[in-house]
Image 1: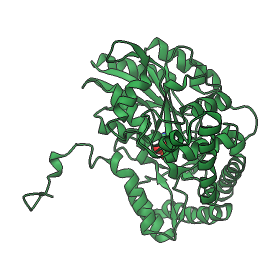
Image 2: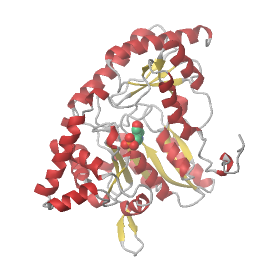
Image 3: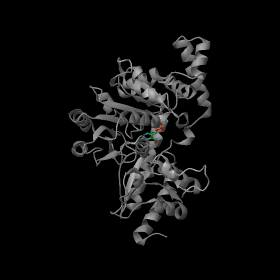
Amino acid sequence: MAPTEPADLDAADLHPALGDPALTSMNFLNEVSERYPTAVSLAAGRPYEEFLDVAAVHRHLDTFHRHLVDELGHSAEQARRLLLQYGRTKGIVHHLVARNLALDEGITVDPEAVVVTVGCQEAMFLVLRALRAGPTDVLLAVAPTYVGLTGAARLVDLPVWPVAGGPSGVDLADLRAQARRARDAGLRPRACYVMPDFANPSGVSIDVADRQRLLTLAAEEDLLLLEDNPYGLFAVADGPRPPTLKALDTDRRVVYLGSFAKTVLPGARVGYVVADQRVAGPDGRLGPFADQLAMIKSMVTVNTSPLAQAVIGGRLLEHGCSLVPANTRERAAYARNLRHLVAGLARRFADRPEVRWTVPAGGFFVVVTVPFTVDDALLDTSARNYGVLWTPMAHFYDDTAPVRALRLSVSAVTPEQIDVGLDRLAALITDELLGGRS
Ligand SMILES: Cc1ncc(COP(=O)(O)O)c(C=O)c1O
């Protein structure tokens, strides 16, 4: 609608990303859940709230404060300044992040190559902002794609060029074909965004052989890989986890994006990026790409709240910097829920071969495929008439083609809520199969 008062703004004069489905997606989904507060939510990919503990936050803060004084030798005054003043742009828990990555992921990284960010979301934004140098730049991204990545790309005017994900997590032939197609069209693919472990939203993981092939292909096609890994810790089975791309990366081809939202505390809003690619700085000296990202960060969020970093740092220190034992309870609960959800789908849809679902080896998400279009209107019907929320998979595709799938999340619910949610979802799906919406 056009503005009516002289000081009003015309949306057409604002950044074109505003109003784009990628930017409105998260708000839309939040609004639906606010409008139907009694609906069971199999939509939210949030950590289970009973695990969040205010008292622990105080303890973590104290632990990190003691670390500054007792282990790093800071005076009381220096420690106070580090915690309460403006601070280092690249962060104050970078050494602990590096230790955590060495222990949990076998990633050896210079702490100077780490930028601690306001969630992984900021890390994605900084990297995309830095990579987008001109109008011919594009980002390849495995589809379906996390909508936060697509939205961040929109904000920096970087078109997202989809690459088929498929059952193996990334279709390597399609990745090569898309990189070449983009180049043939005069474009410059700057990187490929990929989530090798329990991807959001597909739940699919890439096996080790394909991780190796992906790295080889990236080298052959001269592509950076942006590896996003918020869910890697949450495997259903115990035992060794596959190496991350970054752990296998011998020539600094991988920019690694990390989040503490699922493994420590979402409200702290702390994530990070490992960017060890060498770049000449303004003085001509080679330094890590992290330094360039920090320049952008200094103009976006200045630095990540040191108090929030201290909470994360304290939790890391209390567990010897490994988040695997620190998440024993969480891993068990999410694995139990995932099994419960998959078994519940099998029970309810055993005699309906037209309804299919994925069986992920970990993470938070299961994708259900149905023989009808799943859109926002159906979600509204589901919330209003059936009392269950889920996420239309259409939100994770960067086009308007109809999508016949929905994402279920197991992270924020109990097994009992899963049962109720699935009963309601089964009623919705049965009614849709019988002939349409109410
Ligand atoms: C794949 C993926 N990347 C990044 C994020 C954002 O993480 P953060 O909360 O640390 O900003 C999420 C959050 O759900 C996610 O699913």
